Length: 308
Image 1: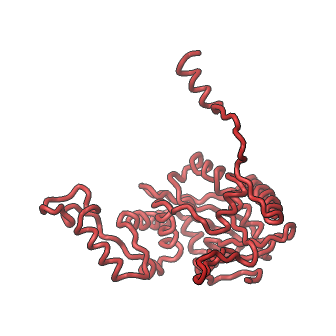
Image 2: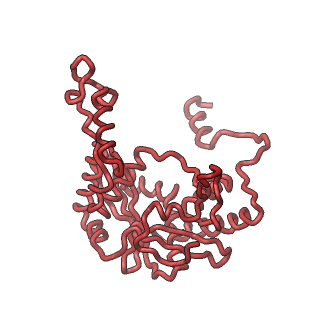
Image 3: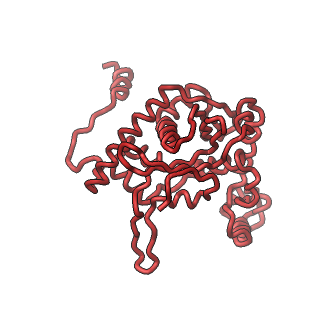
């Protein structure tokens, strides 16, 4: 059982395994971890979905990662740990229809579907078994976002500021006794939590929606875990990274309402999780037939379009 503390050099896979069940190779069954380990993702599932969804995440049952999430992870490495790029990734061939033609030799409109391209990919993966294969376009985008950081004075300041990249923190919630874990993208020595967030737009109105729909929970939860572990938390900053051209980068500091909202949701979720764990009851949305209605916005649209 891992002890509470700060772990600066823990590999990502080891972090993900904390609190997760393991597979018994003899029986093929899942062996439960000694104790639950709560992450911000589990707290989000409690708030936005249900205890049942949170339980599934605790068991390691994950939704498939999207191409955009994989691009976000690649960009994260390119910005914070560029020295790891060559060891961690191998770039798939550029899908050029002339380089990878159809069977009759004419240029292909869908080069990724050609036999020549598939063979080239298979050979590349065979030669680089320990590396993650990434799309050519994703490397181009990650490189462009990296350049966006260089263009943004405050973003570059944050990246260059002394601190610990990929800092793992394990702490116990003093109210429920639940063990919690957090992995900070970068913990600055001055007590700032820097969190990189891929987005479609870094503009205030658009990124504010991203924060309100998801990111605020993590900001509050990470502050709580940091303080339980004795870290001198002072500020939380999101580095918004546009993953689409023109790849603008913009730092946003979490206001007091963001942190307060995240802490309140985290407190509520931890209290409810403790009760679910104690009773081993994990409800979803209920089993009874219930009435469903239109949203207020839908009614407004009907009124506007029908004139009734």
